[in-house]
Length: 176
Length: 128
Image (cartoon, rainbow over all chains, first blue to last red):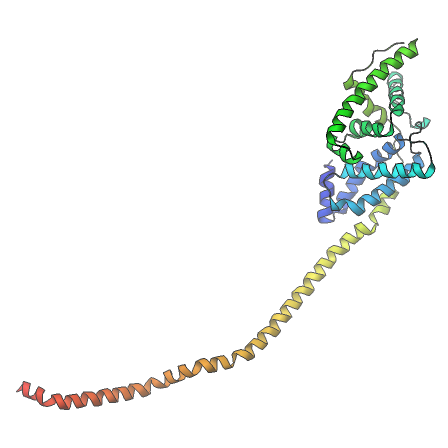
């Protein structure tokens, strides 16, 4: 699979629709999952993916250096807009049907982790997921969330430590 | 059952696996979005834009060629008197070739003749 930035560079330079298609196919499933993980209903997530890519196509060639950061920034903003319109809570529990089908202990761990992540503020959830799930670099996360890169680095480490601490506390509480 | 808390490294790995294992989106729905995207003005527009560049370049080339052709013709008209101006010095020069030579030869011969006539007796005297 080619580098997303390279694909978008080709698209912007040569109007290469094939490169754009490859970029879309590599990014759209994960973007949909990200939106659903952030509490977006699955049906609405398709609309947000569509809208995010339309805006992406219209604007990316102005500065095609960090396409994934730009895409997730659009999607995150669209999600916030849709929440404002719906007057809904920033995060919703994950729908039951999206739970994975891994082994029982792993599933328990995953459920527990998602629960802990959902307790974090909106911005911190985005930071964690973009960095450790979507795999954006610190710099890309900083661009996506409009934060200084140093803050992203510091907060990433702090949040992981916080999750670990909460994990222990929760385990202790649940065993008592 | 009490489990030990995962290490920080394990937590980061767990974040990825916990969310990546979620149900995947419907591929058909994503393909529909893809199709709509490829019909977007930006994607189509970029192709048209490329064609406009080609057409623009051809028109510019034709206009440039026309301009040079017109300019060349008008320049030709202006060039006609120029050789006329430059030719007079050439024509006399060409006309001079036989005339002045003859004249000069004549004058030379005349002058040499005169000198010969003047010097003649001297030479004759010398030969003697």
